[in-house]
Image (cartoon, rainbow, N blue to C red; front, side, top):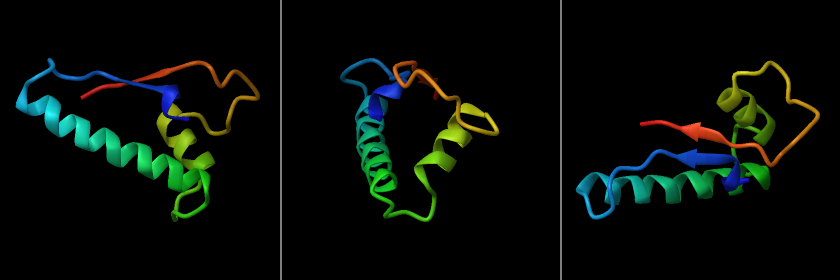
Length: 69
């Protein structure tokens, strides 16, 4: 699931990049918890929020969505 999102990260070694790394860890944990139905938000709802679609496409889970700062 994490591979569906491509983060737009700051340059390696920057303070901002270190914070982004921590945030990505939390994001991956949240996605994992959503897949296991351990969160209040379902994985389907999360994907609909991230894509802006009212329903999930029947399709290609190999496409990616950029995650911007």
